[in-house]
Length: 617
Ligand code: ADP
Ligand code: ZN
Image (cartoon, rainbow, N blue to C red; front, side, top):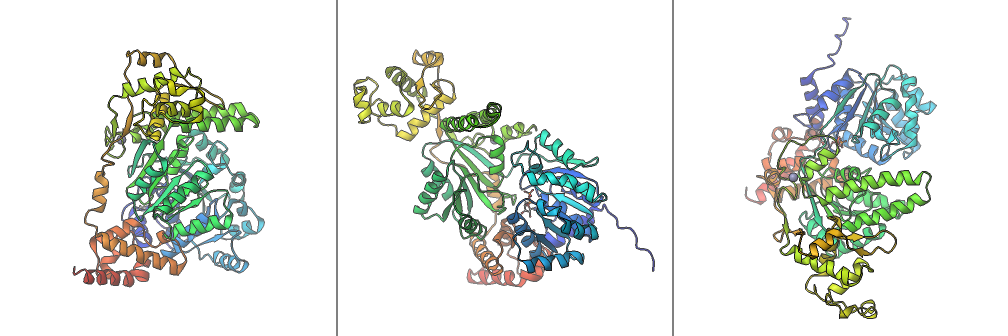
């Protein structure tokens, strides 16, 4: 028999052919080619790409091309399950081994793995180094390991998992296999830690750009969290959204409020029992639920790629958290909106929480100082009227090329300066002076609004000249103005359990008419549509799009898989734009691989033809 020619390991057309065959994509995203090349050449690598950057494809392609079995280490069963489901829908042989499987299922998977039938095997880190597993994998033998969410190995990261530490032994057990680490966390310290812990040899380090151009960022003064959120959610009627809230109570209240306004919403937080949490996650994945109002407990394990909107009803405690939470929007590359409703009161609440947790922690002070630094940076991001894309990109140490992003509230010019801001400020400040700087924001606002409360009467503050001076401004708006002044350093809010409003030199300058003030409010006309959004919907038959979504839901429910693994939104929009009426035309749509043509082509094409007939198209 003639010897087989050695496979050409690095061959771009071949890579594209594979990507086209399984996933129906025609192009690669930035750094995917380089990362796939490292995988094919078995050169250790560290790949840092933002959420939605397309990391999974980087380790899926080499295994498909070599026909060998590679292993993916992943921290969460839910993530593994979704990935395996999605791959199987594409005709890509993959299996997972985790504690959630029935014995018979696990045996079946192990048999398939041992027979070399799987291209990818997903394993949890604690399971990987068990004797039984090592024997199975060494017999194959495994060619390459992909470590997903690799920042979990570092305690400098925001999600340290001790079980990841054991991966340090990987190179000893599999000296000839290459190791490829993937993460979206960018700090140099975490990066170095990953390379050192995994003992990567001369790794190819690939770091992508952190900007997410398809996200529209808005940071608005919070006047009424519930009403503002409802407004935002209504812009995305019937679409997936996540609303992040500070506490469990807040999350419950928000979900109740949205439900009262006929939004399909539910709460999600760590205080709910595991069963209910799972049901909520599943309902969201299967599109039976549009909005999840959640604490930060929600997110990992959710990779629904068509989340069109992320609302922060309160400010997160660091820019890293903000980046990660907003990162869950628009993973399919289509436009998505991220709105943060900001009040300086949030920062003060966080400070209180940090102090409390520092009080009973070891090295508490040191940790608290670091956390407050992160908090300050987050607050700056909110308070500064500067392009949001630029600020975020620069925060992560990269430079931003555009002068106007066209995709943030600042560049779209969506906030108004309120007229007479200086007079408004003077009224507020003189009221603080009248109550002799001995009261908190709540009381000062009551006096300004002419409230008839016991406290006001007891203190005889209804006799002050500032009593009722701002009757016509609603309470939430006035509260926001007070905090805007605090944020700008024009008014002081003291520390402690009962913070008081106090004056400083700047306050007096304003009262003496020596200094002008800016206060902002959202523009009356609401938000603008961005150019990208118009382009993305250009020529899309909305009726057909919705009807295809319903079909997707039905297919997903039949198969017991999340809807997004059937088709992404980008694919549905293209179908609703081009209305393919043959299998061949269907096969040319982005996101439709060979398996899906065979598997779903007939059904989808018939659906489109029927729709067109009904509509007389
Ligand atoms: P990450 O793990 O980096 O957050 P994923 O691997 O989940 O990102 O990919 C995000 C989305 O982008 C998925 O829906 C995926 O199918 C899609 N995607 C990945 N690579 C491409 C590509 N080259 N062309 C089009 N879509 C892609
Ligand atoms: Zn901008």
